[in-house]
Image (cartoon, rainbow, N blue to C red; front, side, top):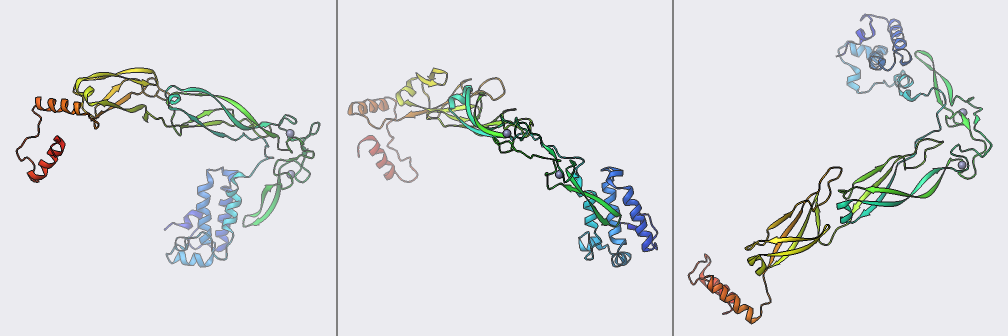
Length: 373
Ligand SMILES: [Zn+2]
Ligand SMILES: [Zn+2]
């Protein structure tokens, strides 16, 4: 259990007045204006200690060996001496402003989506995208004021942007400041807004933006073009433009990372005898060397014909999957030739019963296959 007496630096038999006095002294010492942000943790401790010792009931409970803060799980008692309020006053107002706020703001980022073909993803492409963007108003140049006029010092806050308010607290009177409602905290008001932009300082128009789409982009890739987003507010810097890529599918080539895949149908005879087939790749026609005795499912690699690697040198590969076609439309003459081939290779179905499920079924399948059914 935390020693709250030690935190406040008082004896266990200290009077209420002594505890209050010790707390006030520490709170002043640890005030962020004095101690800076480093004092925050210490102040929390001190405030917690006072939350207990500063309340007769909680202090009695604590003296009996029960930490009421731990027990209740809350930091403030029902009667609330304003611990949270003071805390807010001290630290909650981390954004307490000094001086008026600036109207100047960076413009927002903009996202456009752009479709590319698989070929464009392989090699990259130069594109022009159309995008609606906010521009600095051509009439007021972002100042929001009608031509010839200027922002005027706010009468309510005299240009400070905030209103001071005195709050009574344990520490005596504490000054808090709130943004001035009349000027929104800017310290100035715009008496005559620009009519072109209705005082917003920006207009919108369609822009054509040249985008260099590099090789290797895929669906979801975002290309950032700095400084081509919305114009900033009141002359602030522009945001960025993001172009999000969506890659369309291809009829022949499937993409996996940097590699391309395709399936090439090879006649049974060509697979057996070997041949050279020509396929149309993104780099033009290329030979596919089918070796004699090629099995269905064989994959051939054409190195460097895949997708360009994004932001790296080199390209992936093109993988050609060979699908050997078994003929199903034989003429009588072709069938005879195939039977002769089978016979010369000794590939006629053996008569012996090789099937574990019985020769009868096997024989029937065989007969159907061999045309004796
Ligand atoms: Zn304007
Ligand atoms: Zn004001």
